[in-house]
Length: 243
Image (tube, rainbow, N blue to C red; front, side, top):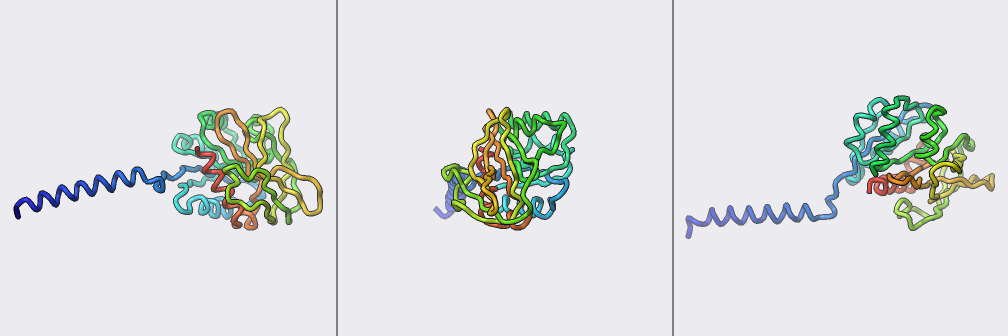
């Protein structure tokens, strides 16, 4: 019997390894990280500080996502095949025709697109399809940087899960206007300045026929990127867009 002990031990170890591997495979807590490409760069914002550093950290917390940041739009084309969500925060040009077409093809394939504050502007007169189809509109102006209130108008949507019904922050209140001839949007939250009765979309989804698109009009500097409601919205947006 002593001579069979090593064989029994080896069999037990093998069985234990199989059970462990199966448990890891079936454990819903071990979800694969969402692969995100975050594109920044351009004018009027500190992209490296608030997108490259702060948002990357927010998204990578607890293993939600793996994020690659680039401020070089020429690199987008070669990376789309390896990601789940494209996160555009840039207001610098994406001038290459092939890259523009590839972004549309990416979304048409059912992939996720998150559009941040600077990317919701009417940045590119020579690429009207971007705002019309992917953004569902855009902004051509904003309030002077200062305080305003954000109100969640759809608390049942996954993008707004866990976000307070309303919160205040200092930011640029974008005058986002839907394009009547563009892709319809579904507003999830609105923004209203303390000195005005005008209300504008702040968080919304673009009801594109194939891919999932989220617009986040907040995001000028620390007073948005570092607060919990913004960080929750961003993480929710990437999760929802990746499904």
